[in-house]
Amino acid sequence: MTLSVFDIFKIGIGPSSSHTMGPMWAGQRFVNELKQKGVFESTASIRVGLYGSLAHTGVGHATDKATLLGLAGFRPDTVDPDEADKAYDYIRNSSSMKLGGTHSIPFDYESQMIFHFGEELPEHPNGMRIFASDANGIVIYYKSYLSIGGGFIVCADEFNATKDGLQPADSGQPELPYPFKSGADLLEMCERDGITIAELMMANEKVRTNGDEEAVNQGIDQIWDVMRNCIDRGLKMQGTLPVSGMKRRASDMHRTLMANPESMLTDHFAIMDWVTLFAMAVNEENACGGRVVTAPTNGAAGVIPAVLAYYTRFIKGSDQQGIRNFLLTAAAIGALYKMNASISGAEAGCQAEVGSACSMASGALAAVMGGNVHQVENAAEIGMEHNLGMTCDPIAGLVQVPCIERNGMAAIKAITACRLAMRGDGNHEVSLDSVIETMYQTGLDLQSKYRETSRGGLAVFAKKQSVA
Ligand code: SF4
Image (cartoon, rainbow, N blue to C red; front, side, top):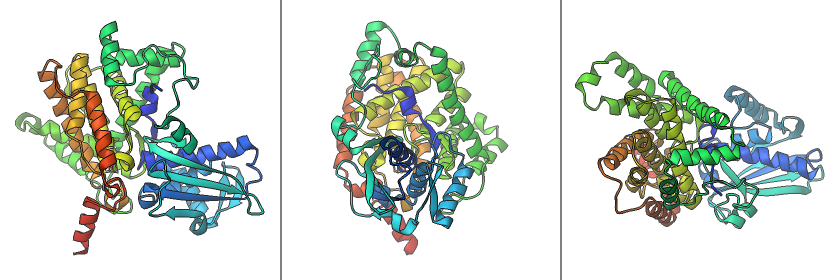
């Protein structure tokens, strides 16, 4: 299935697309399925089991809370964080919940929210099972869900049927003019029809909206609005990050940069400070459960807004069409990672999250800087090539260290990758498709302790140091 720009960029809340947004969608979906099966009213209790990475880093990512909120009728794209906090407190304090927002049932967190540490579902490291029982304690419905990255949720059957968990091409999707599956497809179709990757994506999106280009543009503009607002909030907010109590740094950095505007004239690298700051502002917001856009995940949500902010603030001639082209191009590249490899840190390490975001941003920036399709593909390839092997080892399972700074570093790397590609003519040795396959195989070869379990790498070393 060829993915849409709105599959890749989804508005939601932090701190994690796979561990927060996905489980909230799973809770939502489970309630809908209870209704479809006609057992919603007879459900008297719910039990949730979290497996693999969802168990290991679930509390730090608020997986338990997100699942319960989904079961209580909240959606990631519309949830008000304050209302969500109140609803969660109600569940924990009253030992009861309103299933689907209406149907009151008892819920004892300690015995009905179960973390299966050391156990994985066979299909995917991010697994969960939800059970519904009637008043006699008989299980009347249950389902296994997999959170496959970027907020995508599939059930085990769907995953097994299509390998990647995405819908098959013949599943009712309208016939697209450009059904691409690889970077080679993108190059071939763009060259054949003399169009850019953004134009190719728009042609596909128009089919999905019955030709309503304005609706597509409004949707894309809304994505940028949420990204931009997220940067602005992150630059203002002070205080500490949840659970770790670490100080938020973006607002102080912002004040320092604003107090020294002349640094832009005397310091050749001042722009790098701004780009890093934009990314950190987004990821601090994400860590605090704020409203973000998956790009392609929440953990990597700062890279694309930061590079797009670089484009709007520092590149002469930037305009609204450029912003749309940037996001369309980035989405096409992100779709390649999602369709052919992984954007899940639990499945393939941080190279799949921040690495993919870097690659998307590199290619998109090259596109709006006037690069031809070969330079765009080259930029995207460079953006991933130098993230290969990057592990996911967040300290205490929180999307904070190394994640927040890492997004800043990847944003800088994306700009460098774009500039390198733009110095060439698009000819290069390693294709984007090859580097995507390499990333995926490298991810599968990573020991599981380096894939979002907080059982290896920086997470363990930093713990030892703090004990010593
Ligand atoms: S280390 Fe990377 S993949 Fe892991 S949680 Fe942080 S941003 Fe996501």
